[in-house]
Image (tube, rainbow, N blue to C red; front, side):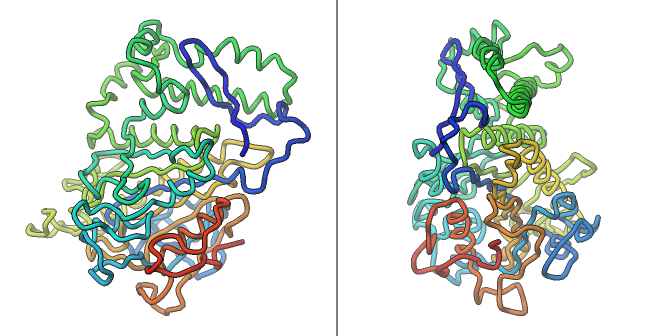
Length: 462
């Protein structure tokens, strides 16, 4: 396991550093698989299946495969970094076809990363999720995966996707201030120490300034010096975007703009876009500088989601209502005119955020390779066709090769059936098994032993 480097400063502040080749002993070589990372980008309520997929035959894809009429259009610049599997179904199956507690929304949330049944009573998953399983092996000290979210968190299974074990849901952090404090090493400071920092308008970079200047005085290569400066610039940008974390010297206008970002409003619809972007910045920093090798980002909750009123959208109903094309969550209302196009707009918006994350990871360089290329960034969804609560033909995108494990620039059918909307083969637990092995965690069957299938999706492997 690679040792992570830190700068340590006043008040117990620590700041994780990116890998600097100039400081590594020449005889030390990276162990096989130690650089891979996994990120899960999880959305809810399904997609507009008629427009979501690339406009291409199975096989090689290019930017032209993602036209403006496609839900994944914002991913066109990353076409050569993607592998898109088609024809996967969830295990356990929905519609009551496999015995399990919970309705189809509950299964879509609780089973997607666990491939296990939901428990009677609590309706939580009966086992560990793939992110936490992998993190327990590859993270320093077996520390848990970073688990973030944006938006309102539902109670129970609908508000959780990550599990430490049976009936042990992990509550995702919806406050980027607190997530950032943990990453930069200030999460253990008491309220008094944080208040002192706020009163003095200091940042974590101020606290480690002495060690930073000493590090810059070392005989660093040009590449390492550039990497270090970029890392510090990113930390500074995060601090100036997150009001109240460890405030920097913001101009009054910027402070006024950020006044609403506080623990009492982070789950509001009006903050969804802003908080989501901050969480992606925090996640990218954590993955790049090594505070974690596994992270999940959950957008909203199952059977929920915000009312989208930004970036050209002016919806009147939340995402769940639109997924059913109905003015009421229980389908007792009237039809929402044009709801399919609204879902298409939402799909493109989430793809834009996914592309933003890919760009952040691509900007980090390690030993001549981008962090994106060393990562599997997996876009997943609670459902496929939301109106039907369908668990078949799941919408999945894998970006990055995870260090060469996955194919790139490919649209691949993983079912042997002509109709991709089937449950005859290609259970999604095989994807979870594949992710384990891509991360160097040997598995032959992830999930419940009596569900799904053994093995990996070999079709996706390079």
